[in-house]
Length: 320
Image (tube, rainbow, N blue to C red; front, side, top):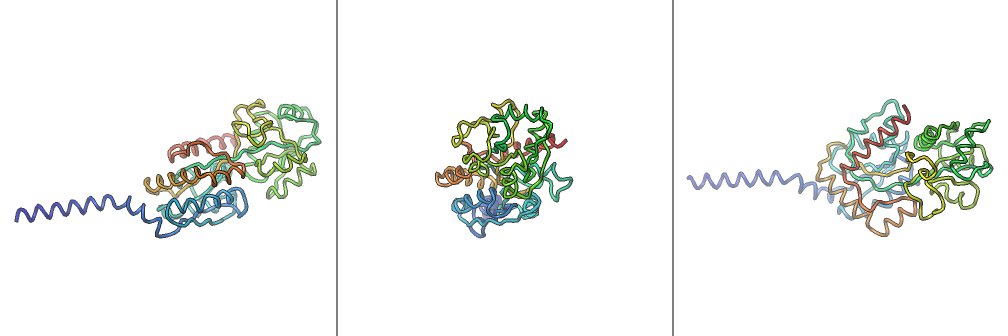
C-alpha cells in the first residue's frame, strides 16, 4: 500500500511539472495552428505597409506559420493600434507601427488606449531618415544659411505638413533654431510635393525615399538629413547635427508590438525570429532600398520599451 501511495505521488508530481511547462510548449506550437495578423495602421503602398510586406513572409517561415498583413488606416495609425490593443495577448495579432505611435500619445488629447501600458514592445526594425529640403529659388544651400535667411526675412516661409511626424519634426526645427515657419497641411506627400515644386510652400521635412528623385533632378534642394550619420546614397549631404543642431533627432523608426500581457516567452521568440529575418540579405537589401537603416543588433524587448518611453517624453516636450 505504501509503495502504491508513493507511486501515485510521483505520478501527480509529473503531471504538475508537465503542466508548468505547458505554456512554453503551447506558445511554441500555437503559431503553426493559426496565422499571425500583422496590423498596419496606414494604407497599402505607404512606407509602413511596405516594411510589413517585406518582412511578412520570412517572419512566417521563421515561426512556422503564415503572416498576413492587415491594413487598418486612419487617424495617424490610431485605428490600427486600437484594434491590436483589444486583441488577446497570445502573439497571433501584432502591430507594425512607425514613429507616429509615440507621437500620438501627446498629439491627440485622448486615445482609446494607453501607449505605454496597452502594448508589449517586441523590437525596433530600423529607421528611415528624413530630409530637410527647400525650393531651389531660396538663396540658401546649407541649413545654417536657411536658418539665418528665415530669421532675417520679412516673409515667413511656409512648410508643407503631411502628418504629425512631419509637423512635429518641423516644429522641433523651429524650436531648436529659434526661427518661425508657418504650416500648410496636406493629406499626403502626393499633394505636398507638388506644392513644394511649385513654390506654394518653401520647405518640407519628409522621408528620403519620397524626396530623393526630386533632389537628384534638381527640382528641390536638400539641406540636411536627420540621421546620426551621413548616408551612403547621399554622402555629400550633411546631418542636422553637423549643421549646428546636435540635439535634433527626427528620423522615422519602425517597430513591432503585441498586446499587453503577451507571455514573455512568446515575445522573445518573435524577437529572435525578427532578428533572423533582418539578417537575411535579401530582406535587408529590400528594406535598405526603401531608405531604412538597420542596426547591427536588433533591440531586445526591454531596450525597445525604454526607447518608446523616452520617445514619448521627447515628443511631449516638443508639444508642451
